[in-house]
Structure formats: structure tokens, C-alpha cells
Image 1: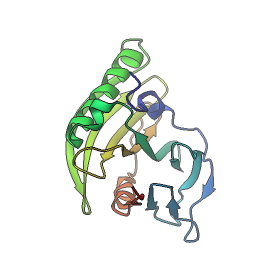
Image 2: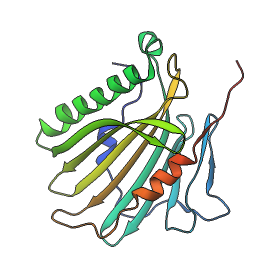
Image 3: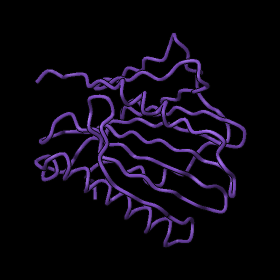
Length: 197
């Protein structure tokens, strides 16, 4: 099971309050050891970098009772067989594993419902992402979520970049606004930092 890090159950844990440092024009270039990206500044996003080892960044925005989150992380591929697979094969494996975890640890235990799950591919800027969109409904909230996986190479990858976007609101609440365009703008800015071999 230790193939890579899974985030399935973390995605429904949208915070109740805005956390972290406000993102302005002075700090919106987020630099990690292996990748970087730029967050739209002065738009109400707050940055938390909870784990430097895994190169994780969490950006949160609140609007009324709704919470919007962008999460970026580097996901190391630990399994030798997966490292040898094409990017799409690894992406399919990862997305199916995330789906399985959500069903086994969430749906089957009655914690939430999982709806409208769809997998696909999307080009953002000049990069191809493998995607998974879904809706999670619990008694506490409803979350609309999108998972985007980016691989530096078509095959023989040691890691991939995981980007997750979510919009969370109380039950039976209609979202008055979406900020997915700002998430896609962030993805468009992403750059892989080439490491010496």
C-alpha cells in the first residue's frame, strides 16, 4: 500500500477559519525545492505551508459561510513498478486508489456520500493534467472538489505534483461564487525545478 502519499480523507477537512499568511504581491511566488507556482495576489488567499518535507502548501479563502482551498504537494512515487509505468498509468492507479479510500473509509462507514465522480485529462496552459472531480456530501457540509495530477515526464517519473481545489459550504447552501479560475491560473504558473542528475 506504500506506493505514494494519499490525500483522500484530508480533502473534506476544510477549515472553519482563515489560516496562514495573507498572499500579497510581495509573497505570491511560492518556491519549493522541486517546483514553484504563483498565487493570484490580493484576492483574499491565505498561505499555510504545513509540511516542508513533502513540499505541501495550502491556500485558503473564506467568503461568508463558504471555504475555498487550493492544496499543492509533491508526491513521491515509492513503488518501483509504478516508477516504470507511463504517467497515465500512474495517474489512473492513484485516482482509483483515492476513489477506493473515499468509498471504504467514508461512504461505507456512513460519513458522507460521494457523487458525480469523473476522471479525465485537461490541458492548463502548456501542461497536461490528469483530473478527478467529485462531490462529497455530509451532514456538516457539501464539497465540490477537483484533483489535478501533473507529471514532469511521460514515463519513468520519481514523483508527481498533486493539486487539489475544493469549494465547501454548509448543507443546502448555494455557492454564490467560484474561484476555480484562480486555481487554474495558479496551475498555469507552475514550474518544475530541474534537479541535477
